[in-house]
Length: 283
Image 1 (cartoon, one colour):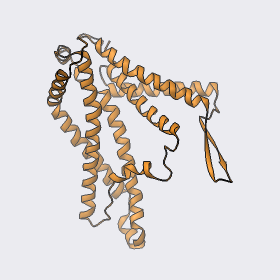
Image 2 (spheres, rainbow, N blue to C red):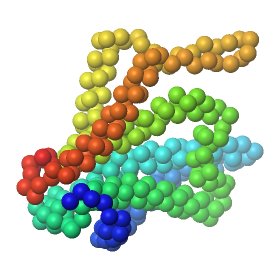
Image 3 (cartoon, helix red, strand yellow):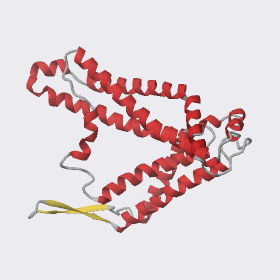
Image 4 (spheres, rainbow, N blue to C red):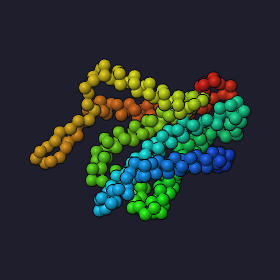
């Protein structure tokens, strides 16, 4: 059964969410705690706030702001890891035979099952992680307010890279490169989460590291001095012109094609899952 019925799909989405709601609540609590502790580490253990207030009272805001940027950077890093961990775990509920048979015999089409899991572990994981970051930031601000520190929110700083004068997406090539790498990594972990039956995140990460080492070695053998992005500084206009090597376009076009293939292969692997499979692979 490969048809897609929206009413059946919505009921399946609601059902799976309710079944796994305790897991999502637990993850939300863990994510909030980890980011809150990280915020305290960067703003308290790594700062000499009291001494700086006594010696440089007029510069305390800029001083504390620099440490706040570290918490934002950690939050972005944590979000990326959480998204990769989430999408690689979308079929972790099928580890043992009983759960696998119950899920595969669910009276829902393969496409609906796949989309339900994909949405929960992509969209819901993103919402949950962002919500955990906002709550952790609010708790950190509350602690700062109670202890008489400068109150600086970290949430507004998330938009600074897109609104600053040195906006990184001034060229469409940079935007293309950014989103290509982000979604390529996501598609790779989606495929790994479908292919591996156990320890999906660890095995997929190990595979990614091995592939990166292999590709870097091959590239160094072919041309160790290739520059994907170079540029020239014009003294008259005081502007910097970026030059994109043709291999830049070849590489990112290939990655886009592989991205589509990864998502397609992930779905095809799911449709071929059986109750009795390999111990480590879903084949």
